Amino acid sequence: MLVVPLVTLSAARAQEEGKRANLPDAPAAKQNGTAPRQKPENGRLKTTLEILGKRSLFFPDLATDKGPLSSGKKLELAVDETIAPSRFLASAFTASISQARNTLPGYGQEWGGYGKRFGSSMASGASSHLFGTFLLPAMLRQDPRYFVKLRGGAGQRVTYAFRRVLVTRTDDGGEAFNWSGLIGSLFAESLANSYLPDGERTAGKTFTRFGIRMGFSAASNVVKEYWPTIFKSLRMSKLVPSEQSDPGTVTPPSPTVPPRKPH
View 1 (spheres, rainbow, N blue to C red):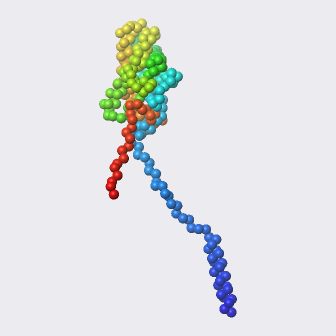
View 2: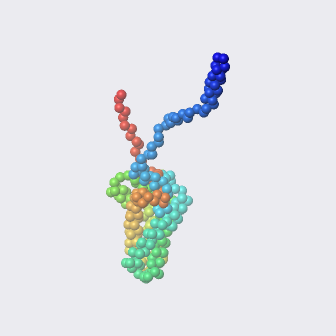
View 3: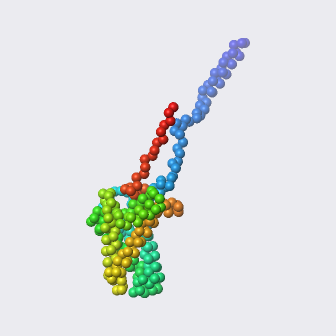
């Protein structure tokens, strides 16, 4: 009589152990050996470089790398500058000023006169880009692009922008007098005498227009210098130039490692 309960109890224990063996293991906590990634801090310089990482449609001559441009690329750049939005806006602005001051009286007033002023401004701009961005830089091996300074105070950057009117970068990374930009603009204004009114076809008027063009070039350089900052504030980073802009004049400092404390 005692054997029957013992056999029954033993069979029940064996069955319970079998059920426990068939149960799935409890999920183990995953060990994450790597520390959670922290997003890098976007400082002012890094954000500017990220904005410069895209080629500018508004200012195609903003440099995107430090390599030299081939003659074909310089011709392509000249075409891009001629049809850039900045060129149309500049021509529209100068035509409006000329219309208001009646500086080209031979064109008259109203919309017809404004159209002639706008067209002549676009034509002189195209000539300037042809000479100053393609032909002369290809011959003199000069780089017609603008390299943003990025570092320094406002005074230093504005001075640098003005200086780039007279000093340009060469294809081998050096600096040289900006013969391409100056002579190219002078050639463009001389060529403009073929379509401007008769009263504007004098040496004095030609050099006056040349001086005005140089002043606009200096102002344009200042805008280009702060172009990444402008787009950063407007959060419109899709229309701008490259993170290697100004590779020749700006070398980011190497990160400093703090000294280890003695144990």
